[in-house]
Length: 310
Image (cartoon, rainbow, N blue to C red; front, side):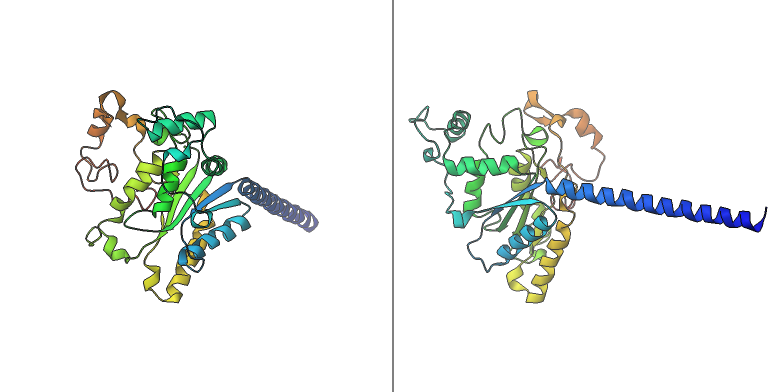
């Protein structure tokens, strides 16, 4: 083979490599474009409960709006205090007459009102936001180991029977099974106090009623909570680090895997929704229970309500 031939082959090889590189760049660019396009179609609802615009919660909410909007998401905020959102679930949530005024049952009456389009405007507006949202973030300061009353009122009044759940459609088969939701909140106590040996008890246990009993009950894929431990008791530099960590997490938030819950079909509906014998037997020799709530009398699975994949 002549030197010229080698030279020609070399040029062909270089050209081939260049084509492969350019093709890779093209595929990468197309993928990036599709990711951006996908994010642009995502809608996020932030249900926010804090009275002060100078609070850490406000800063966390603003960071979420800024980062998610920059990533192409459409973000709506329900600022409950600014809206003066009604916190009590009462007959006044229904326009017109109720079916049984003498024995008023909020769940049944609001189901009928929802079906007839007779819920009050503040509820229907929040239900609209929720229907359109792909991700819901609840941003709040933890009050008495749970959400503030105004946010609990939002849950009581907006997540009505029929709209958010039914007897047949709940938990893993719930109405919102294609949506994601998460809690983002501040605590007044430091992290060690919410540990298995801490005076406040295990935070995983504290979160079970909210994340399983409300969010997962309605079918949401529940993302791991964003917990800001005692920001009012740490230096400003530490608070800045907390916010930066939240900003970093939001870069991939919509792609995160949800927390693990036991699927509804693992329970026997004809026997009081007890865990099916075959499921129980499968986990009989395991060290930990299935979840914080369905623990089978075993040790609780570590971080079951705080980290995905455990």
